[in-house]
Length: 190
Image (cartoon, rainbow, N blue to C red; front, side):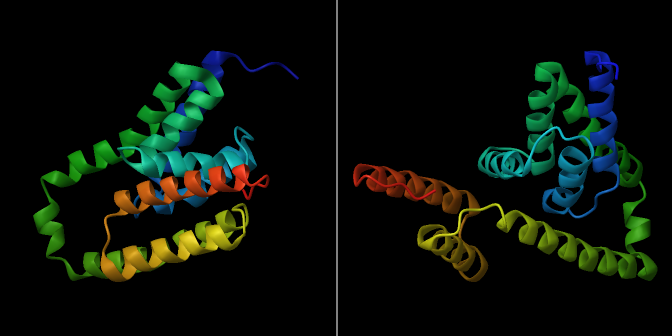
């Protein structure tokens, strides 16, 4: 089998993330199942653990999850240029859709069928996000600490509208503190 050139890899990254950007509605979380299928199952660019790491980084850094994810995968696969092509690919569909809709959004907003369609899209996106959570939860370490962090983060964000960034920062700090403490005692939880 012939080795893939860097040029072919750039094109493949661009087209893959163009497709992800074009056919995913509902934001970054809704993209996770498609990113998983394309990058892990279809192209074998990353594995499940890489996806979890990517999502942790994408969620912890400024920017949109889709852009951060495309940049991460692109860089992993083909360095700087891979990151650039993947990022441009995931951004272009939204850019052109927003550009086209900007002038006519008020007219469409008044159409009841458009509102009905968005109700269906939101329901479908919720299922996609739940599916991604279930798949990714299989890869997370399961111990008292991680379950406690997940439960506290869920309660803070869901019921107290806590700032998600602060929750992530405190969860990261808690993870470092607990791991250092466990390592100091001679054991390590993951």
